[in-house]
Image (cartoon, rainbow, N blue to C red; front, side, top):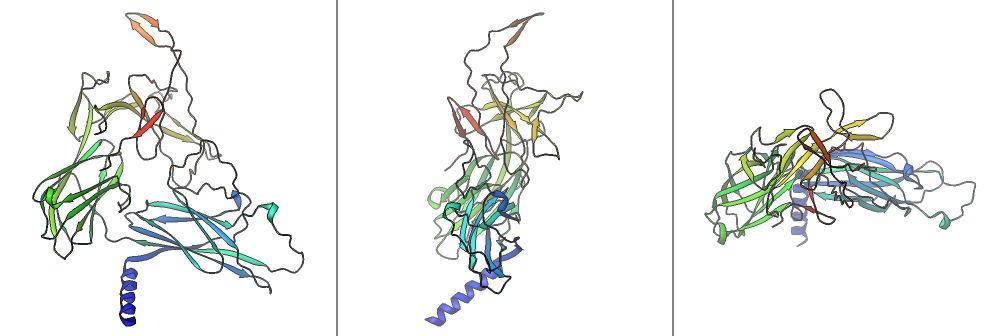
Length: 441
């Protein structure tokens, strides 16, 4: 029995060693006790694209610089994607309306005794991850009084390694090109496609679905920006043999422009038999017809994706949003803002696109008949956060009657509903809610 277990363990270790590889190794400057954020040592990692799994390995040790023995310290590590984590181990008060948009913060506590500790992430976002590390905070009122004189001189150093699993690699696909898929049990087939700026939604069409004798279902998952996993995906659907054997299947995927989307297929089978099917996808864009493009009526035409799918107007783009959750297509003005900053400080602003004469418009016209979207880009790594400020001003309505102008009465009560979301849209709904238009099956 022991021989069988040892053989199985060696096989598992050999399999893991073939799949998981180390891509980075680093160490921190000497750690110090936390008093404020400047005391934290920040380590930076870069996650490659199309990674299934990542493991951050941390090990802290005491380096003796005197004859006296060093005692282990308590170490805190906070890990976050996109930017250094915002932390308050001393329970200092964060801003009242503080929002964290770039992912959850993972925390690890251990001692500097050379033991290994891990933070594992399945289906991680590609890009930069940051770890803030320090000797654990102690309330000054509870610190012990130490005797001055001959004491141990120690350096606390944090060593870190980054391990990833990249296989199986996603296969890049293009619109309207049929792909033939053969699914083996207990394996994933993963595909990725790019959604351009003009795409509103994608329809995925599966046909010629052939289940094996003992197959029960095919699992379909869709995720944006990263590979989908068992616990998290934008769309998840079980195609059962009873419902879809030799039949077709369509799914509408609401998309975010300028993004990579991943589709994974998994087969549930008790034996080594296979299932197969063919699939294609097509990109679509919606926009109001020529007669109603300035009136935002409910009439909307749907066209296959082409260069004229989105109508451009002065400073803005007139777009249309379709969703199974809406009874009608929602028209809106989208303003792609221009970032303006300075190297002397961390302050920057977002402005409208300048006119042909170089002047920058200072206002956006918002009415109660349509929705307005402002799109701006936050740089990863360098833009760790801050306060986003909007300036609002109300002006009376001006109507033209021939050559004359009529100034309307200014509204006494005005409510503006604003929604903020990273990598997507949220639709303002009355009286003060935001709704993310994403389908979950």
